[in-house]
Image (cartoon, rainbow, N blue to C red; front, side, top):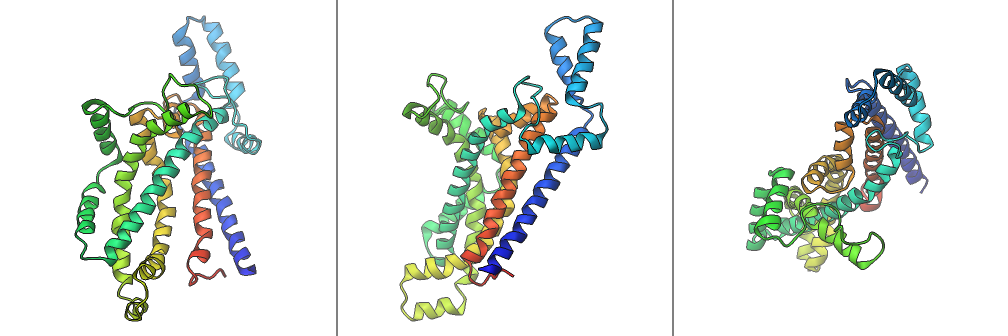
Length: 334
C-alpha cells in the first residue's frame, strides 16, 4: 500500500508539472501573438457607432489599463497566475463584461458530455470487438467488421461529420443538425430538455465514434493475436477452462493494458476532433467557444478554454495512470 501511495505522489507531481507548463505555454503564445485584444475590442466598438478621435483614444487607454497589456510580460504572467488561482481570468472581450470563466463553465458540460460518451463507446466497443476478432480469427462477421473498420478509420472527422449532416439533415431529415437543443424547449431538469439534448448529440457523437472505433478495433485485434499464442492460454484451453473465461480473463485483460496507454495518449487529440465536429454541427461546446475567442482576439477567453482543456486532459491521463497497478498485477509501483 505504501508503494502505491508513493506511486500516486509521483504521478500527482507530474500532473501539476504538465498543467503548469501547458498553461504557461498557452499564455506565452497568446501574449506573443500579433493580434492585440485592445485593438480588436476597439474595432468592434467603433464598427457599431461613430466616435470622435478623443473618445477612441480614451477608450484605448481604458482598455489597455483594464487588461494590463501595457505592463511587462513577466508582470502580466504573475498577475495571470494570481487571478487563475482565484478562479478569475477577467472579462471576455467578445461578451463583455461576462467573465471568461463563466462562458467556459457554460460550454464545458456540452463538450465533456460529448467527449465522455463518444470516447467510452468507441473504446469499449472497439476493444471488445477487436479482442473477439483476434481470438475468433475464423469468424466471418468479425472479418467483415474488420474490413469496415479499416475503411473508415483513415477518414478525417470532418468528412464523416459532413456526410452524416447531408444524409440525416437533407436526404433523410430525421435528426437535428445544428445546436445543442431545440429552441422550443425550456432548459432545465425536465424530460423534454433532456430528450432534446440527447437527440442533438446523436450526430456529433456518431461522427466521433465512427472514426475512432477503427483504431481501437485494429489495435486490440493485433494485440490479442499475439496473446493467444502464449503458453498460459494454450494450457487453459487444454485444461478445459470455460471459453468465456479465457477470452475475458486471460486474453482481453492482458491485452488491455497497452490500449489503456493509448487511451491516455489520444485524449489530447480528441479535443482537436471535437473542435471540428462542434463547428460542423454548431454544437455549443469548448471547441466552438475557442474558435470564437481566437477569431475575436479574446486573450482571456482563449486562456480560460486552454487552461480548462489542459487540466481536463492531464487529469484524465492521471486517472488512467493510476489504474495500471490495479488492472495489471505485473505492474508494480516502486
